[in-house]
Length: 165
Image (cartoon, rainbow, N blue to C red; front, side, top):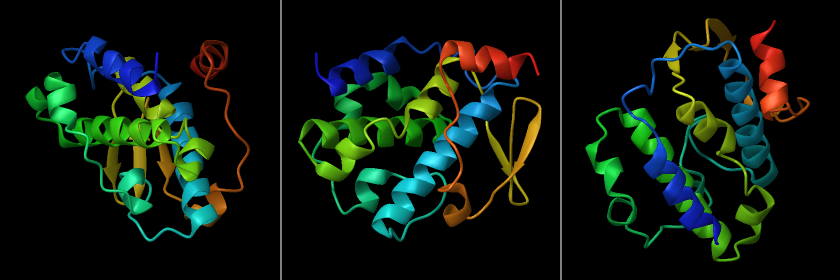
């Protein structure tokens, strides 16, 4: 099964009634790992885009012909623009990976931490240059700094370790 179909199925299985209601400390690990991946993409290809939350397919100059709302109608029901935008960006990125785009293939799992966070009912807020999630606050560092950070283990075991801190 291709990545796009799998991604559409994942989005379709999300229980949106609990989304943004779970405040687990391990959500910070997911946010930090996404930000690191986004920073690495931005610095590797010298992208001019908003940071850290952006549509990577569009940032590298691809304008998708994929009708995401047609492929995943549940997204049309969402009122949370952050959640909707993240899911659209994720599906457009997977479509680009499937098309064989080398940049997308290199960063094929870019959105995985954010999708995991959404699947787990996590929430994110931005306030005064800080990202808040899971009871933690993380200052938004620049992309150059974040691109040099070590990867964070976002496996179930790694996230359990964060939750126990």
